[in-house]
Image (cartoon, rainbow, N blue to C red; front, top):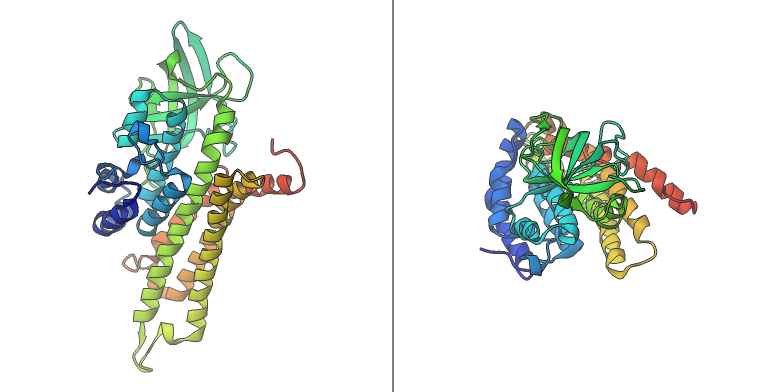
Length: 376
């Protein structure tokens, strides 16, 4: 069944039920890329959510993309993050990429991702230390990217460097993952989001044509702020909220099934347990409401849009760790078992706080905005 703007949620639900939920535990245990899940999304046309209809995409915008990422995260955080980063890369390509690449990204034949964060500038992703030097009709790139999602699976990277010759903080490039001189330092074997294939990538004298430049030289920062930051923050928040949704579902199921045989009652019969579950739901709904208002601000072009964009990722990430702490508390010793599923969500939620812009950086930005100070 192929997704359309009218039925994409129904199609997504079928894929989540039949493929993504089934694959998620194995992806986490083995730490492998969710190829089957991503393939199912690609065949249904769902990887084209942010791509325009002219490119063959669904044209769903940030709201539709956020709904997709949230629903996927309810079953598999790793798959949700792969899709999140593809959407962010595809959004840049939709504005600045060549027509054939835009069409391929919309069809899911081109799996995109961002290569922004670097060892030298860490979570300050907007200030790359990697270089770009002209050599005839080519450009030579050198950099140490610290974390790239889908590093070994992406078709190409939306890559940042220092400007080629002009002023500004950065320039963006479309760099094929197969380019000579690129080294992926994987596979990923981490705490959470174990299937997102996140790894450092080193560029040693990687040559790309000048035509690989996305946008203008020195204008990478503008693209990061105008295209990437808003979409990435709302999708990252949606991922955190989806993880909370999944954790609540599993916590409630465990509480309703775990019995005190000698009392002929369940955990859910205890008011204290129900209060914990209620707090999980309330906190999740609060984060979801902030995300919804952020999307409304973006759609209306409200003056507080950037403040909301900064807030939604920080709030959802922080709230997710609180909600999963509660889930672990409710499920007790059972929470440590893989089959219950809570500990996977507990680990996956920890990633949002350290993904640039990190929660600490976002709080600094939010404080500056509230105090009337420039962000940069």
